Image 1 (cartoon, rainbow, N blue to C red):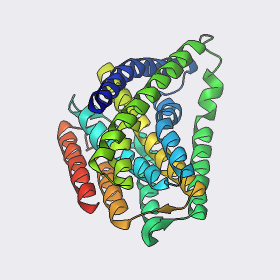
Image 2: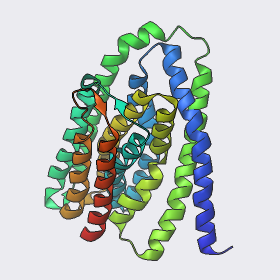
Image 3: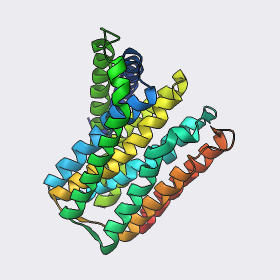
Image 4: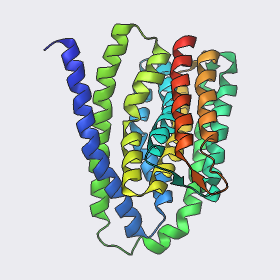
Length: 309
């Protein structure tokens, strides 16, 4: 089989695994929330978001240990843009989403602040180990807030359903399929990027990010189709926070990151703009028009990233 044929086969296998895994993962998340009698948004912002970000964590850790933490930085920041601009943009093509501003709350404020902090840390062209540790400390603080907010709900509901293991099994099995799908996509797409001579950061921001964001893409689109918009929104916000804090923080802690301000600024600028488009209107809806704007923002991000590289 030719190299091109092998690349294509990997990408097709990734698509099939993602479809099966996404269905199981969503079924597990919704089932776990029902079993524990807790809001789906809480489960999505915590377990679903952290789980779907596991491919980014794996890629960034391996890259940092290999002395190439820029791949992790590009993957994390690029995934954040892809999560909101591309994934949510596509989801809105299915119709408007009902989102209360109060539902966004603390996590939305964090999601806006963390990228700006990252840009400030990268202003001198580097993100050092101590700066990576600061991001990890902020992550610990955010997780502490989540635990505090959800403690009473878990205490009241965790004993209700004896069959909690079943939705958790669905979720874990689905996540495993999604992670494998992401890995296959990364392998195939990275090989194509190498042939085309794409630089390290751009490979992370555009190519690797597309593969590692496959779990979020499938989860959010299936959430829309199945009528669980809160799962989709919670997954994206939580995933963005995990990417910006855990992945960038861990990569920088392992190996200082060389960050080109123009590349990082382009990615973060589009990411913040995309988040602002997530704010619902007076009727508490995010309409398809916002989806078109988000997709346009992603197109600008791709063009700007290529241009700055």
